[in-house]
Length: 329
Ligand code: AQP
Image 1 (spheres, rainbow, N blue to C red):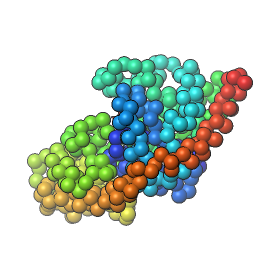
Image 2 (image 1 turned 45 degrees about the horizontal axis):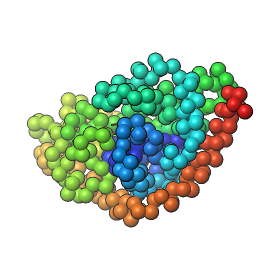
Image 3 (image 1 turned 60 degrees about the vertical axis):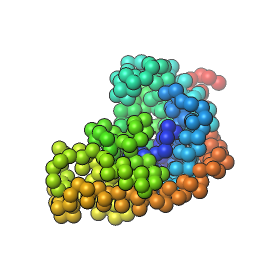
């Protein structure tokens, strides 16, 4: 199977990116042909400082490699020009009304200037995926609407011209990790564009992790339990369980069993004691990733060039089929 996914170089990946998407990217490499893109053209839908964008891109590559992504599977979107070319072709094909109903447009256009790039970026995202004729797209739950849009665009293109594109399927992490929430407001997702205290970056130092988790918003109910009406505690439990499940699947249980296991292990702990357990688990898990990141961060430009050649070959073959279908011969 072919796998495609992308991440914006808008900062170091956080635990949401890591548990919601990157850990699946790593696993899929064992049995599938994978293409993972640092989607720098998506990042510029919000104005970026050029020097910072360059640094964030290099750091994103180093962070992904530190998490276990093979360097040959990695490439920068802007270095494979077929993404923009297919993007334009699909822009010509996509009704504006399909884009104005996207939740991300509705949220982001309230906080940013309403530019064409911001409105149309799910179409570029469709081009990213369709260029590789990917079958599987491992993403967090926030991307579901964009994946459905990709299928709508590809079906409409195939029926208007020729059947060039394949149907794609989203691959989501477990219910616990598909949507990791902000540490400052557990009702909104953890995001790179939110304040630093709201997220754990995968390269945060042990001290910083301790500070952020200790100050995370929870509630005043005593003891620890797994309940819908405790979003802050539930989010910390999700982080803890998702990390532990990477080794043992010990939390892969039905809801009633999960609730009773949480009760058994943490029921009589205070919030402070529980947060200490969460801190220790995160620190232990992220330690080797931070070390590898520090070793790799200065040499990434040269090591992802191969990935760009590999991606370019597949992308140009699909684009040739698209040109053929359109009569652009
Ligand atoms: N909180 C999350 N929980 C689970 N998965 C998540 N993803 C993002 N946030 C969470 C998934 O990570 C992949 C990369 O997404 P991205 O580059 O769009 O990351 P982001 O953190 O959402 O980025 P920004 O810059 O903060 O953008 P905004 O603020 O617009 O969301 C995707 O698979 C995503 O689903």
